[in-house]
Amino acid sequence: MKQKIVNFFILSLTIFLLPIYHLYAAVDKTSYSQEEIWNKVLDFEWVSSDVSPQINIPNSKASINLEDFYYVDILKNYRQVQQLMYWSNGIEYPRTTHYLDIYLTDQDSYVVNVEKFIGDGYIKGDDWSQVDPDEFLEQLKSASVENNKERLKNGYNTVQDIRWHIKPEFNKDLGYVYYSLIVVFDDGNETYNSTAMVLGREGYTDLTFVFKESIAHLMPNEIDKVVQSFDYNSGVQYSDFKAGDKIAAYGVGALVAGSLGIKGLAKTGGLAVIAAFAKKLWFIILLPFIFLFRLISGNKKKEQ
Image (cartoon, rainbow, N blue to C red; front, side, top):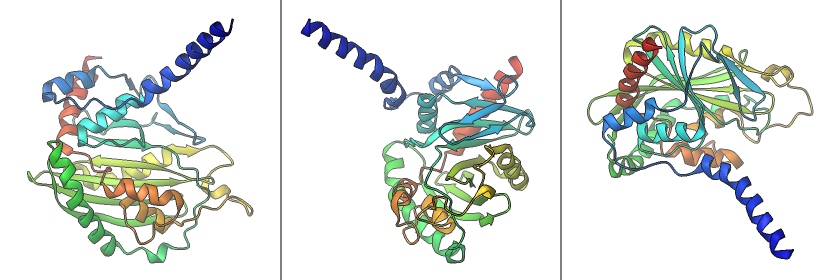
């Protein structure tokens, strides 16, 4: 009888842990040809916004409604998102939960990476005056030197230069903070990486945008559109703050610093961890992969 109980316990534990292992198993780091990668990516569980325009963000009390966009390819299988991020950038990034390829036309699109909700409480803007874009950029460039060692080891292009496309801006009325960077790789290719941190009453969600230079002039409006399609539930929006609510141990300025891996303002609690992630420049995605994939994805779209 005792052995039966033990066997039942082991079986139950295995059934419980198997989905967790499946979800968080390490990414495949096998060296594949580009063609092999494309074929594997095309076999991922892509969902069209025509079929499922509403995305619920895990543990965030928030969703994104993509109904008003021209067309969106959505990837929300966590393991596949992680694999795609690794193949794009040569570095694992466990915070990303969704990958969106948003089309402006049949030929032009941009990518949005949706990251895990961080429920640290309401984030005040009291420290915004401490944001120093020039100092932030210098520290970011220093971090890229160390990060390049890992990129080089994994066979990816190294970062040669980083500059501001749009310096950090805080839109308190809409409840988000935004900045945009131009990243230049050693082969001369450039990628535009923009981050919008959407604030709520209980925390924030990161949205990272990646696009090419030819549509850069359109992106401020597109980012506003995506942010406004992102909706926290009634009662937990940034404007719903009330006295007595949990207050984050850092402000909006420190949040920006943490997302960039800047030490000066990002010393507190979870931000120190976020800063450690960002210091590896994990928000930088290799441009050639994205847009070669986009062409394949576009062909797939037309065949549907």
